[in-house]
Image (cartoon, rainbow, N blue to C red):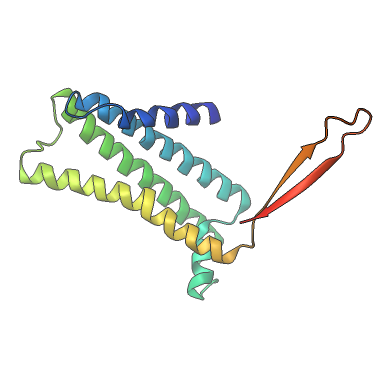
Length: 171
């Protein structure tokens, strides 16, 4: 999946190259690749938290001062519901965008109802992909310790031994 993630992220940069006034489809398609990438990341996170049995809901409840409010099964279920919400809001946003670009809109973007549907999918996607993860990351940052990155430089001039000099950086 890493190779696919790198390709999707590299393709996203084309959004800054393609002028929407020249071709709105070529400008929008890279953004769709970013949406797919976020779905893959959300899926990997869901699997990761399932394996650890520590979904982000644990940290949210600890932060709220109610760590035993929900059972472990409920916390994991909430995380899978969140994952499904990311997928559904992304699919809705993609279907809406692609149908407009293809010339056969599912909902007419020139009517009040079509505009409201588009706004709903935009808001839902932004909420589940940007706001919720930011909130969870801020809580996790307060719940976890410092992260240290160690870099080791190998002295290539020494022929018989490869000693390393670790250098640490605190974030």
